[in-house]
Length: 113
Ligand SMILES: [Zn+2]
Image 1 (tube, rainbow, N blue to C red):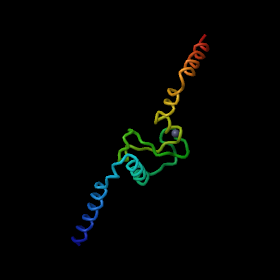
Image 2 (cartoon, protein in one colour):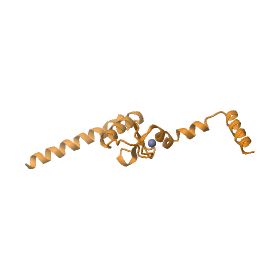
Image 3 (spheres, helix red, strand yellow):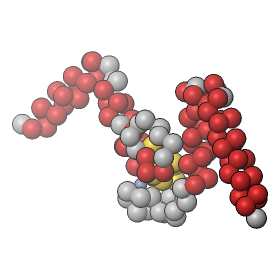
């Protein structure tokens, strides 16, 4: 009985240390997809988006931007909430050429009058 318990513990520790010694585990690309699939397996996918509460196809979204191997750092969001939380929509506006941005500003001013 006690032998079985020891074996179980040994095997678990063995797998863990094997993963930590793997240098690829710490690589950004490999690390990200490994963490992504780890979270996908452990964080149950809801039917609705966590933010807007709509039934849509959901993306697994990182909250802190640090891609922690921790369930609390991840949530399921729909595509549009995902883009907002990523700041991708803001970035899009900032990446517009100067002429277009000043054109938009001019039109906004014109609308005020
Ligand atoms: Zn949403």
